Image (cartoon, rainbow, N blue to C red):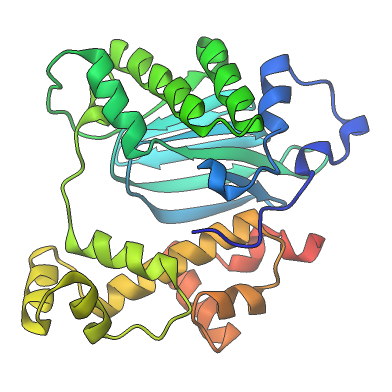
Length: 293
């Protein structure tokens, strides 16, 4: 979803108070204000906070640039410092803790989904059968893939997006060489995912069952039956997609809660805060970007 952009110049905030970062982190930090069309998001927070049950729908890299983080999925938990990278090898649900850098009170990370073009290219380059594995999370050092990440950032800065995807594919191939081949396994298609993608394009729309029936070529009975087989309901699927969009906006803009609530289809800020708290076990104001605007 494209929107009126991530906060600009976050990488330059309080630079005088911080030690000089390693060259790779400095290069990646320069991407913090890049447009969302580049295929990643800059995650910024100004209060330590935790979230429960954050859904990851595809393989993803999270590169911590400033501060610390903890991610847990099932029985696996990993802790990251600046310069560390989290790989989620596929669909999973995470509990997350973000802790800002003490020197300037900012947590900063790049969230980089591995799109279908990247995964398809990595499958071709691996040229080996992909064993079936359960998705998982793992930490590694960004310096392990410094050359590819440098190429990725340079291509993005120059607007060469195909070249940037090839650099990410090289990272994916290297990770598969370490045994993390689950990221190449295609995600099983789901109706709830399709509905969520439609909602994410227009989260403020007053979505009704007939809208999805028309868009997906399904009868109302079939739509409800297929959702039921996935253990989902239509209202819950719409609400989950809207709140995921809200989380994205809270991390990538400095909009006040009222604006975020309106952009994702809530007329009442109080109702939005209540639903967000129920979904993520966090008051949305705790992320802290709006009050710093």
